[in-house]
Image (tube, rainbow, N blue to C red; front, side, top):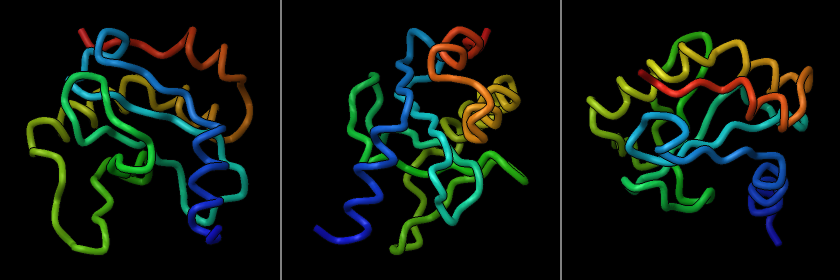
Amino acid sequence: MSEIALDELTEDWAAVKRIPDQTGLSRAVWITENQGYPHDCRVKVSRLRSGRGHWPDAVFVSVRPVCEEILSSSGRRELPTSDLAKVCRWIELNRDVIIEFWDGVITPDEAIARLQKLP
């Protein structure tokens, strides 16, 4: 197994998945704890609308210093501008919780209880 594949499996294990009914978004989103990853805080967003989708196929969106899609090696954007804007509003609403979970300050259960749905 490659190092990248192992990182994806490890990060998947540390992820909390939230579906559209829980976030107000049209796509599933995952938040993770930092398990020593070389990148800063980010979430993953499903490429599929509906709440379906799989972690390895999801799009990275940075939490800090600014919310933006992290482009894949192809260099092309995966999320429509309107969906990214909504994801960024959700991240801003939940920024403290996402970062506290990333930093290991709160547990998955605490993060789930504190994450808010967009109005």
